Image (cartoon, rainbow, N blue to C red; front, side, top):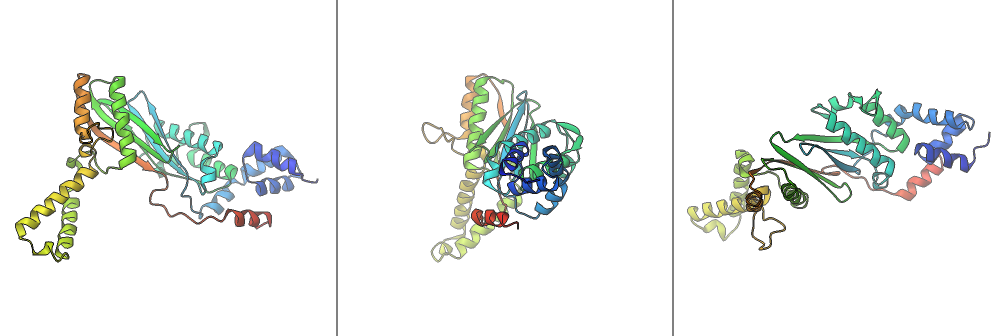
Length: 312
């Protein structure tokens, strides 16, 4: 049976699979649409294995909350930004986020073996393999984190359509809209300024010692600064360390919406707490940025399309 462009188009719309994959499926099944859909599904595992070596460094983050107490953030990667913006892919990532929120898994390996929430006959891994077959790119559930505020609330913030996902958790005896708005403002600050810790109390002692050693070497290699008295050098080091810690600790950062340009996050929270008769204490934040730390390949989209059309 002759395979027409219209048939390929219809199969693509039904499955979301790639053009050449659809053409091959229809050829193998003599144009039978139902059998072609089944063919694409059955070949999902082979497709996944073939694509697994390809770099998945694009994608999106998604955040989800339940009852203002529990929140989850997940990063799912794709090979291209084009797929990351695809509605089918984004719907899949939403489903993964819902799975994380309901899950007790502590790592990705355990998570992948769980029954898929949308179809318990499949595992999370099986559902991922199906998506790889349908979308036609290597996909990867890279990481997730679930946060529960036992004595307060969690808020989430998504920036840039999913480029950055943030959770902020706080202990608070008042959980009204004003407190929620304040914590959401801080989630936006986490997205923008990327602190490493909530407060100085969380910073490991060896981190501070390491930074001090670097500063000592910098001063030692500076012709002018190295000639200063030891006591002065020690004061310079402590001053520079304190300045750095204010930049990497959320509560010590200048609040980005501060009217005077000086109010710290800690002072802003104290103000909100006083205005609402509340006791508020930040306990945790999580910040995921899509593709963070991953190597990205150089795309030559025109060459890739030409290779597909040539049957490669």
